[in-house]
Length: 369
Image 1 (cartoon, one colour):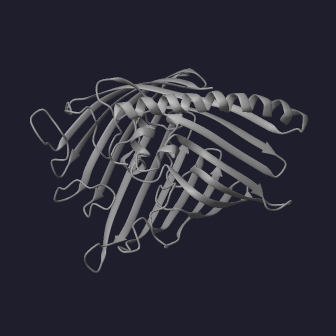
Image 2: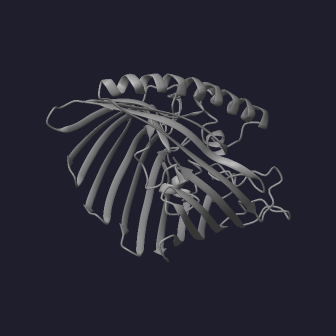
Image 3: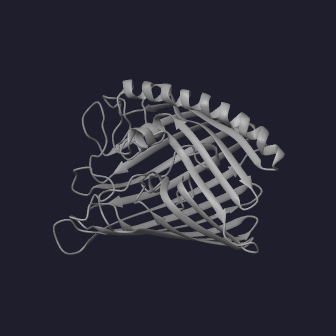
């Protein structure tokens, strides 16, 4: 998860995904025709996000800081995420299957078996009650943690907060969701680990919970948790994690605030290591097609539970960013962002050696279809 595969592997991965998509599309076309007769809803969709990032630190191998998994290549035009997916729904059954490629998938799924690294989502769900909105979904699905996703145009900022980059983007297991009312949704999860498709060799069960409260059309509050282990049984290392976020969006202004807090048993002594993060984002609509964003964030992981830096205070940094988005069409954006970090330790590469500061510029063109 914290290193890149070789360029050769990436090229092979693209070729493999392309072959899957040809077969996938052919099968899908036949299924769609049959599905219409059975009143099933089958939807094909795609997403492409291409970017250019320039890091003033000039990292020698062109890899951005190790705790970033999105837009993480320096000084090259690259594919962050390209995805094709199909969604199926009929009566009390639903399913989704999506394949992906890009530097995000290459960086974030490097620890998974090779055959699974290009899967964005693969799940099936059944409605357990005729009268209540009670669904059981199983497979690989997007994480219930955080307010940011891998789909860039769904997020207020171009790049992801450090909180989002270092908590699960995806999970594998089962999820029971109960939509109690249009304003309240709760969920319980049994998963294979902390952002794992294949679990590590342990017998410790991993669980999660979520409560999403839609206060009104403009405001939402969410609380998500994770409990379990992401280490072999020989180490133990039980982990407890909480994420809370609040979002409000008016006609011109918007505000999002999120906070993370986690703790994990220490490896070689009695006690717990802890980490935490917080982020605030302000959005301002300038006109019908332009919007500006500003972000401030803080993250600290002195015990190096999530990110191993080898420095005295681990990943402890503040960050700021300013962004400008141009909405070309409802699902097509050109986005620009400047972002800077200041760490307690010399966490970042530069042409002059390790430094406490890092500044970058990112430009993205993205469309969903």
